Image (tube, rainbow, N blue to C red):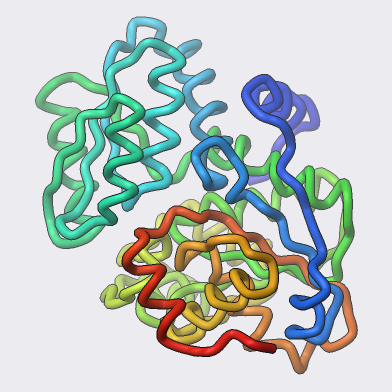
Length: 322
């Protein structure tokens, strides 16, 4: 899934009209902890605290040109995609209904409601929520906003274009949820011509994409992660998997304990809050630090939307001193 220069530049203009480029920053304590020159892309500084908004802005711009009669949308999420949909739908005067699984993040739910969405809790995991959202779309004639689509990827690519325009690390670690983030990284690599190795990072407790990457076909796998809800994928998207198998160099898995340690490290070393999926990139870099010692490494703090009580429990559970 590669894009023309104009397609990327169009997405850049759309995003720039809403918020400024997010920073990429090196932190001395983080450099020391990883043993490398670590550049952090701070997508936690977007207006919804995560990278997903970029995709929502480009998706809805294209949607309104394709379907100008559209008045309502529905989607499923664990939180950040839903905020993106709510934010973009409100900009275009559309109603938005979001389906989340039972037990979803309370604070992500509240953030979505604050953007004016109707929130529905259904099912025990994301896949069940997505199936229910599709049923609602059929019942009410709403437009179903997917979790993976080329217009979403094109928007998300803008953050990687920003990053690669500023720094050219030897390797980037990229979390994999439904696939838009890592496919966008590959598109931005092609757009900018950098030669960074792309390492995908899945949760060891939701490793469907890793299994599928190795097998060369979509494989369903159970989801048991407690922390990385943004990576809680049970069934990979076939189109995303095709791009990942073609463009990504390897896919590794990190445990919830490794994610928690990375959340603590980011707070101690940068005083930024990371949700589980938002810390997975650093967790991957820490796991692989012996391979990349002394070299230039890129990580993404892709989201900071974690419930206060959960974050407090993570911070209190272990030491983060490097």
